[in-house]
Length: 88
Image (cartoon, rainbow, N blue to C red):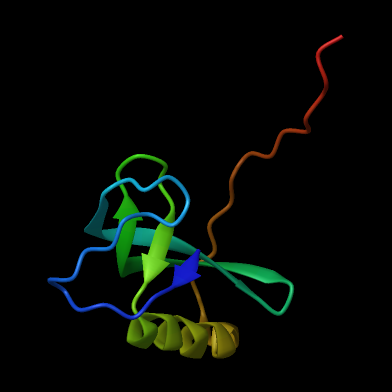
C-alpha cells in the first residue's frame, strides 16, 4: 500500500511492475499500530497487472482518522485462517 498524491485524471505507472494503474473503489487493508483494519468503499489507484494499491494523500489521511477511531467500529468480520505447511 502506497500513499500517492494524484488527481482523478492523473495516471502513473505502477512503481513495481510499470503496469497500468486504474481508479477503483476497494476494501482496503490498513495497518495501524500493530492492528489491521479493513475499510470498505475506499477510492484507490490499483495496478491492473500486479494489484498494488496506491492512495491519494487525502484518502490516506481519512483512513488514518478512521483507524484512530477504531474503538467506534461496530462491525466485526471473521474469516477462516489456515496455517501454512511446507510441501515435503
